[in-house]
Length: 214
Ligand SMILES: Cc1cc2nc3c(=O)[nH]c(=O)nc-3n(C[C@H](O)[C@H](O)[C@H](O)COP(=O)(O)O)c2cc1C
Image 1 (cartoon, rainbow, N blue to C red):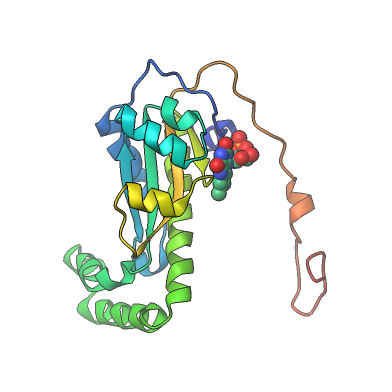
Image 2: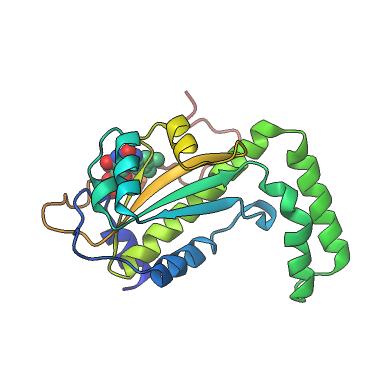
């Protein structure tokens, strides 16, 4: 399946086949595709908790206000946004030097820029981490679709209870819960979308007012 087909065929699945599992290698492969998503300065703020044990999924279902798909899907992935992800920048930037992509001067520039942008600006760090996690989530879901798998992105859960139940540290914000597995009968088809012409302003020039000016 090519990327256009995957983007078109992906839907949020409510009903999963409870008889078909997804192995850990496949989940790891999907996470590696998620990691291909861009992040500011390549900070890579996203972390993943993979839950497959039934009693744990049952507990998560309650935290997700009883949404049955959380118990039915063979895998639940909790995508976390690390709001202090920028603190790892020296090590991450060094990897680019080691790979021969840029030199130590570029590394030091990036480490400084990241420090200036986020170290004393928690609101910006929060937004950046959530942006990164959102992009990673979409990559993961597109890749899963291309593999014939089904996903459901969810934010309908009690974040505080979830953090307690899974012992998630203060610096991490749950960005998305993703149910992953194989679809069974009864799911809705793709829902209609607003067309490009309805949501876009084309050929805008600086100084012009437009549909989104009010
Ligand atoms: C941030 C976000 C949160 C969502 N939370 C839930 C949720 O808690 N439960 C649910 O059933 N669907 C949830 N969805 C799925 C949306 O309802 C779904 O994406 C939307 O209706 C469009 O349908 P489609 O994904 O099948 O195209 C969520 C989607 C997003 C992007």
